[in-house]
Image: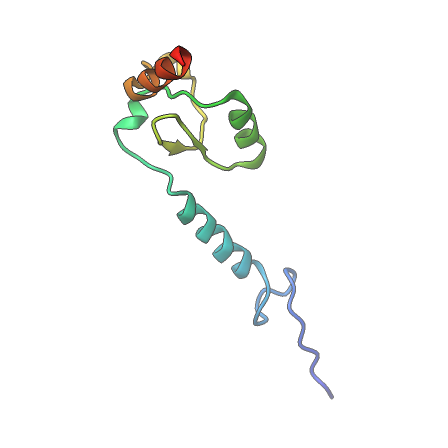
Length: 95
């Protein structure tokens, strides 16, 4: 009897396949994005509208004018505007 060795998502115990490979790749992508916690959470940030829509569809973090990276998901009207984002936006408008 010959053993047939194949790797697939349906057969995660096999070497080189399964969801463990997908999980590892996802973890690497998340680490590369470096979602940042901290004081930035107290503010609403300026991000291009198309990037917010793209984030909603893809699940990827967005990057604000101030450099903050995060996954949008809260009502920005409930928080004051980030002073750094606001200053950068005002300079952009003046140009």
